[in-house]
Length: 95
Length: 480
Image (cartoon, rainbow over all chains, first blue to last red; front, side):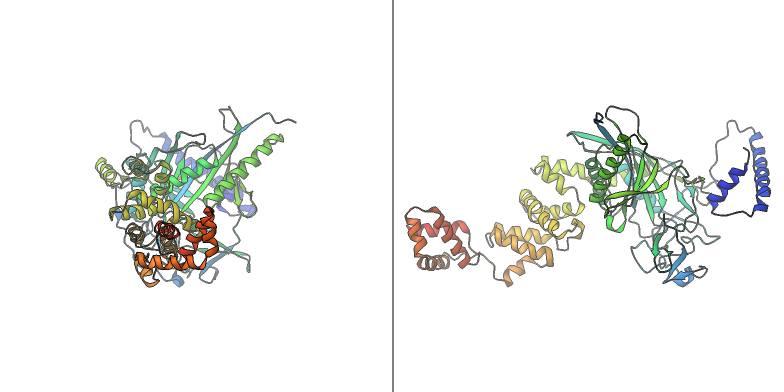
């Protein structure tokens, strides 16, 4: 897969970020290198090996449906850049 | 241009249902509806760094129940996946859902088809996921306010096959689905609180075509009536676009019930790329044959089976049986009084008559009936024992329904018992006869209407507390 300049623009849109103009070329080549690095995995012969979804040999770790106290709203909001009436306040996000 | 084409509407549904668990899917915060903003939250459901989700066992139990009750196959090896998108209703910037291995597949529900007969609406899959937070627009700051109380409340999403051909079929399916989920206790399905929400994928095509047209997705409908209006409005819009030679755009539309029209929300061309991948923080779930069989055996009698039994064993009409079994609460009202020994048909008549009328007049749903169910039986009992007349019973029921009062006490306190003392009835009638000589003469000269008038006056004098047949008989006797 080739990381094109268009793909960088698409990734910016998905991440809701804007890269500085001077960083675009570097981001493009970095992403390309990352993909190449991961591509080395495809050199392995995985014939007959079951896909694994998790590194731990565990299943069915679950908890009971019992309520525990939540944390105070002021703690929930402690890191909020902006808040109003105990709501987080964020830039207008409606369609 | 003459319209030569007739059109067919094709729809599929995605129904999101909030499960009736006490706690959220991945943390122990309460799922209680409402509450002050951001008071049902913890580091897990607000996506703080370094936290780990812990799966609520009851979510899996409920999802399996829902799957079995809708004739699905249960996936025995389950995983969760991350659906990544960037929007303030999701503090983690991803939703934990199931893409590759949904917990239930290949089910279906039977409904009455549009042209009569039955048809099966296929269920493609049911998967488990977490709900998002609630966004409120703040006009003062022109910003968005975010409340994460709902964030992490467990959902199942029930995805149907594109098997619907009319708004009626959609409504019948939703009513059935709602009844089933309420009966098995996995959700309260309160649409007004958003615990049952339907998205509709809709396209139109010429009748006879076997290809699907381009579809739009409609969101934002909060009642069955709004859904029916939205379907009819959107079908009409698409047909008009096509008949004018246009093309339907694939997009998400928001139904505005006040304006009776839908509006484009976002175009699917630049649709979200969700970059799904297996959720690394949760380990797989294995569901044993034994667990599935135990769950299957623990399911209560489902509405469809009840409906059939009400007809075959209790002798109710098809229509009455279908109406009563459409709601867990009407069934509870019916069965509690049946168990108390009152006749099935009499209880059904009351439910189909007075109960339905009061529900419709007050705009309430059956789950909002605020009286003790045994009070209906108490009223039926008083009528059976001739303690009150049927008309009095109907009036008393109004107070039972509206104020939840005990009908036996109410009848006692308001002195509504039928006058059984024939001497007293006779005396009252004699007074009426004496006071209405003109009507008496008319009756004697052959005018039947005059008798009705005298009966009416007598009933009024007795304040409706006498049996009309007795009154008529005594009146005729006096008049000779």
